[in-house]
Amino acid sequence: MQLGTGICLQERYFLMEVLGIGGTSTVFLAMDERIQRKRAVKAIRKAKFSGQRLWEKESLLLKRLHHRNIAEIFDILEDEEFIYFVMEYVEGYTLRELMSTGHRFSQKKVVDLGVQICEVLSYLHGQKAPILYGDLKPENLMLEKTGRIVLIDFGASRFLDKPDRVCWGTERYAAPEQKEDWESGDARSDLYSLGIILYEMYYGKNFSGTFSDKPISDLEKIIEKCIRRIPKERYQSAQAVKRELKCSGKGNSYKMKIFCFGTVCSLSIGLLVLSRIFSQQAEILFREGYERYMTAGRRGMETEERVGAFLKAIDLNPWKPDGYAALLEEYRQDGFSQEEYKTFLELLGKESGQGISYEECLAQSEEAYGRLSYELGLACYFEWEGYGNKQYAFPWLEQAGKCEKITGEERQMSMCLASIAAYHGRIKMQEGELTHPEQELIRRYWKDLQKMLDIPRSAELERLVCKEVAGQILQYLAVFQECGIEGQELKNCLEEIRTKDGELETVIREGEGLLELMDVAEEKT
Image (cartoon, rainbow, N blue to C red; front, side, top):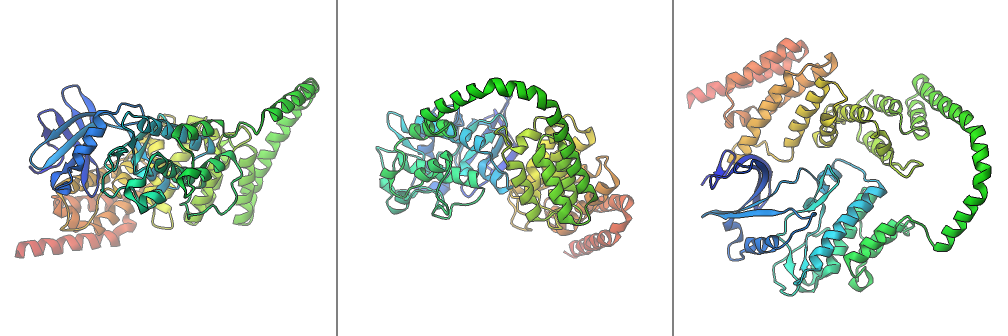
């Protein structure tokens, strides 16, 4: 059977969309037509596991597991070529997808996700026949918009009382004992992998093998202990890590808490009186300081001077959107560089005086956060280093598309661009090497490019959109035609772009010329 979208498995699960293609499997978004619920269907070709029957092990594991942080399995199907796992559809992104965009996690978020991962590891390790997950990595952890983390893909897991000789784990996240002896891994190996993931989320970079600085914060100490080379020097259970994470940042000792409490009580009466006197004056100074920095930023002669003033304004009041908007506009004056994007993300990840990140401060206003997400997404999509970065643009555009406070046209454009950006990394645009599912993705990609031309937009954005679509046609003419998109349809699109933006005439003529050459070649054959 030719596997691809449009197929209905056992007259029940209709395959609607390819979610991902891996080395051994393809994952589809499907509709359970019996109950009208979305499902994820993981199709594994049997030939990939000839003699090992690893899919049987994965199904055995999944069938017996029921936990809020594990993707639930509903059905297992089989035909001559494939095994199909019908699973809970988790609507979100893997931690790897989030990290690859430069997304920064606040300390609070790292702790929250770490606690959830500990809970599911504790559940696995606590089974009657304990289960070692064996391949804990950002690719196997899905984060929903609700904040729930979900563990997926049990292909590398094994029962601790039934060691096998199958190589498992991923080099960067595998504990030293996993690399040295397949049978020596235990629950502490999963904790090592957890430590590496926490490190990457907290520091925003890959673990180099050693801590460059002595751990200072409670969270850093927890991470350092998780990733010690010798298992007996690590935490001995996921429950122990969870307890430490929950207590991190809550203070050093009971005596210190008592001392602080007594001091606060002694001063509270005096402070209450003084606060009434100074609060109004402080508010005035606070507001005037913010406006003074914003004015200095707008009037500054040098870029460095303007950027510095906007950064100070944001530090003074991370809840106000004006500073972020002005800073982003300044960065976009001569293109949007990787260094500027990194600085902007670091700014959003800074912790405010209230213990939450600047991004969380701004997100308290849906409109302000939606507006910034939209502009930041456009900057990444069209202006990154002069050519655009769709991968980095995707999470911001998707966030903007969910915001009902920005204009309808902006939401529509955000959703369309996010849809287009989502294809990159999921499909390969190489002529002659495309599978049926990949061709289907490229056809949908083409439809989204056409849709983008129809969305109302500003004159400035109009030119960027036209340039993007024309460039994609010129670059992937042969691929589009291989996927069944007619040459006349491509010509019509180029003509539409010509009417919208005459400055792209050179690109349009080049595309039309290539199409004519391809038509001639086709006639000769």
